Length: 263
Ligand code: T3D
Image 1 (cartoon, rainbow, N blue to C red):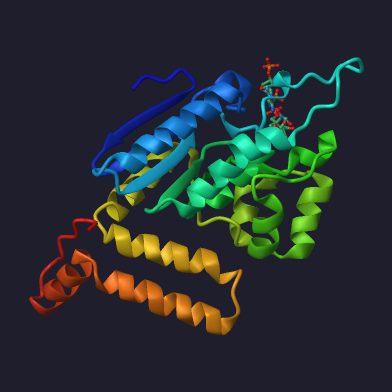
Image 2 (cartoon, rainbow, N blue to C red):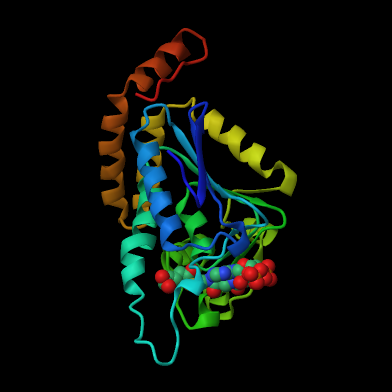
């Protein structure tokens, strides 16, 4: 598989997908969207893949939509932006959330517009110390998309979500960590290896069980307490039917390290 706008590789159970349009700060044009879709499809089909790392090349992570792709001439008809949301951004966000394995986002630099919210759909966000998150939408008259209006209030509370979304000021990685928006901040030069080593570790774990963990947590915001207990019951039934559960218990009883196969 060869790509022009992304890099994609698989090693040690980890699929590494890196956005690769650094001159445009990895902003999304249609071609890059299509390549990301294709790579995610391939990772899903590949039995070897048990964790995904999403990152980017160059000094930025992603500046959201490539604005040079939008015709805003006064003579041009108003664009219908819902088309690209429906076709590209929403499916990407849904796919990352539902991806049946851990998804780590390594934010290597500025993350703006949709690029600031795509990481929030991932399971563990590690940011380079120099990275910043910008809800840049308001600066061009748009609203936070790619799940921003859903994730932000839940992760950092409504007051802070409104601050970011209405002012569009940069939020530095350390502050994002302090606010509970991301998992970890590391020195810039350590980012890739930190993300990869975490992913390699997760790729040796009970993959199906981990996919049930994320499914349960992701659903919890939509449910009342009793419904969520039912979700836990149902997912625990499924977890108990995996080979990895058997192996985990057996290894514990035999006082040895388990060898999970992700099945
Ligand atoms: O349209 C739809 O489909 C609806 C969906 C929308 C989703 C969205 O994401 S809307 C929001 C779009 N994104 C933005 O509004 C962010 C625009 N970019 C910026 O505000 C700044 O570039 C940054 C704050 C991200 C970084 O600033 P800085 O000073 O570090 O870099 P820069 O000089 O502004 O950018 C570097 C280059 O990247 C520059 O190109 P050049 O001059 O070197 O040739 C710049 O034009 C280019 N670039 C940055 N962002 C975009 C971009 N080119 C196209 N589209 C971009 N979004």
